[in-house]
Image (cartoon, rainbow, N blue to C red):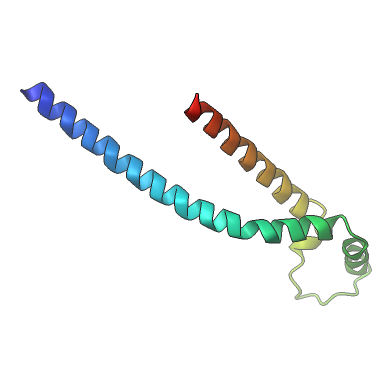
Length: 100
């Protein structure tokens, strides 16, 4: 009888943890999916003449000192795009693993 109660308690903990993880992932995926349009826009900007012109203007000191310009760092957008691709790969591996 004690084994049964212990098993049920363990399964209850697993159920609760699983439901929490799923809810958290659903929320994160919703935010992530919303961000995809912006990520695409940043990718387009990063490979554009506009980005090169903006970068050059920054290098020449033509932009205000108090302007946030992380988007003009050579690694900022590139690293974000690389991280985005890695997240997508991990999601695919997770799906492949879970469906067999």
